[in-house]
Structure formats: C-alpha cells, structure tokens
Image (cartoon, rainbow, N blue to C red):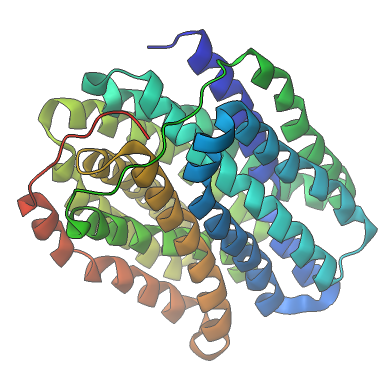
Length: 369
C-alpha cells in the first residue's frame, strides 16, 4: 500500500499541511493583537475557510483538466507564498487577503490528496489507506498547532510566518516525481443525494466545533493551556482515525458514527470548566477522528471518488469557517461557557441522522473521478 507514489504524495501534502497548521491558530491571534478583536479573529479563519470551500468546488475539474501534479503545485504555492507577506502588517485587510489566498491553496491540496489516496489504495483496503493518510496529514496538526502558538509567544510572529511560508514551498520538490495522472471527468451522479448529504451533515456538525476550538480556545482562557489542549487533540484525532479505518474495513464504518458524535459533544461540553479542558480535548479528539474516517468511508461506499472528496472536504472546511465566524458573532452575548454548550448541542442534534445513514443502501463506486 505504501508505494513510491503514496510516499511522495504524502510528503508533498504533509509539507503543505504543516504550513497551514502553524498559522491556523496563530493568524487569528495576530489579527486580535493587531486590534481586530474576537470578531476579527473569527473573520480571519472564516475568510480562509470561505476561499477553501470555493476552490474545493473547482478541484474535480482541475484534476481532470490539468492533473494531480499541477493541482498540488498550485495548492502548495498558494499555501506558502502569501504567508511571507504577513510580517508587513497586522492590519485586518492584509490578514484577510492572505487568509483568502492560503485558503484556496488548502482547498486544492486536501481534495487532491484525498482523491489520489483513494485512487492509489485497493478498494478492499480503502478505509485503512485513508486512515494511514489521515495519520500522515494529522502529524502536522500535532506539531504545527501548539508549536505555532508557542513560537509566536516566545519568538514573535515574524519567524513563525516565515517558516510557515517556506515549508509548503519545500514540498514542491516531491511533486515532479509523482506520476503524470489526470482524473477522468466526473460522470453524472447516479447515487441518491441523501446517501451523501446525511453523512456530510453529520461530519459538518463536528467540524463546526473544530473551527470554534482552534480559533477561540486560546482566547477563552490561557494560551499555554490551549496550546497543550490542542496538542492533545491533535494526537488523539489521527490515532482514532487510523483505528477507525481498520475497524471500518472489517465491521462497517457506519457503526462508528454515533460514538463519534457522543464523544465529540461530551468533549466540547467539558470546555466549560478549566479543569476539564484537557480531558475534554481527549474525548473530542477521539470523536473527531472516528467521524473523519467513518463519514469518509461511508460516503465512498455511496459515491464516486472525486465528488465524495470534494463534498467531504467542503463539509470539513465550510463547517470550520461557519463555526469560527458564527461563534465570533454570538460569543459577546453568550460568553464562552454557554457558547461551548450550544456547540455541543449542535452535534447532539445530528444523532437522528445516524439511523438514516445506516438504513440507506450503499452504491459501491469505482475508484475513478
């Protein structure tokens, strides 16, 4: 399963994701420190996720027209180069412009990486292959999220911005050695819309919470505690995703949807108490990892690879953006404690969809775009 092409693709993707995660929580903090406040912090994340979502819609066409190598090059350049402009100013217009460009790079990179993984892995081991890919792209979050926050406080924002800009550009070295593949154009969908919509909504409920946590946890209490909590979550999530992939290949991924929602909601609710932040992030990280693997595998059983990859990543990024912006709008009225509880209830509200997903017939698709 781990052939040369998979290894090179993961190297390029990991470099891009490390640049992304180094700034994911750091840029909102930079915007807030520059005078934009909590709303500006949420807007920075929301702008990035908005452009991510818009570009994800175009990636299946990009892969069919120009191929995987061109898509990966464009994604890495957009993730890296704009970050080098951030030391120039902390003014919100510049921060938002950089966030929009980097979000576009993220959208291209994640859809291309997920789709190429599904192409390269045998169908009977797809869950495990996606789990391994999830671990690989989860490593940058383990390193980048806490390291970005720590380095910004200890060394200042400028060194973090420079490193985060150069690391994705370094990943370009792996791209020329990838096979020159183009995806086949997407055929009209034959699967029921509900077969993809319901797992998408389930996954979106937890990504909303993720956007809230990575943006506002450093602002809700101690940045150092938030750094440790995000590290714990970043370790638990890829480990749970890998285990869920192996379990799903053998016993069915749909069985993990309800446990993932319950664990995620419980972990979110624990953020109300400072003493429960770390334990809550353990639970949330496990639930998030289960849902990453389970929803993606369930969707691949019901739809074509290109459509599923784009839709799943849309749910990921649109959910995070909506969570960051929406929470920024209401937190002034609710406070952080009540706001975290409301986000937990969003996940609980998705539980009725689990039974409908389990009862929807599957359509086994070919691994083509």
